[in-house]
Amino acid sequence: DYLRMFNEQGGVCAICKRKESATDRNGNTLSLAIDHCHVGGQIRGLLCRQCNVGLGNFQDNITFLKSAIAYLESSETIPSGSTVQAALEAPNTLTE
Image (tube, rainbow, N blue to C red):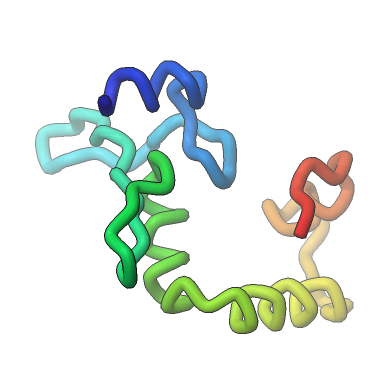
């Protein structure tokens, strides 16, 4: 099942569309995390460690996530060249 999902996602995170970059103490790249709904237990997809931890920190709460997006969009202090700035300038591939 993992390999099927991995192939369906093109080997990248379901959220950020990047390959996993986290490594273990020996420098080996970790596998994408298996994300699941903490209420019903259903598997949702494979995520990189950063996105998986991010969802966990936001408690899978859509209201919190939308508020964070609004906060970032309203900020006038985003450094030029930052990941956030690059995302804002990129074509919008994410929808609500």
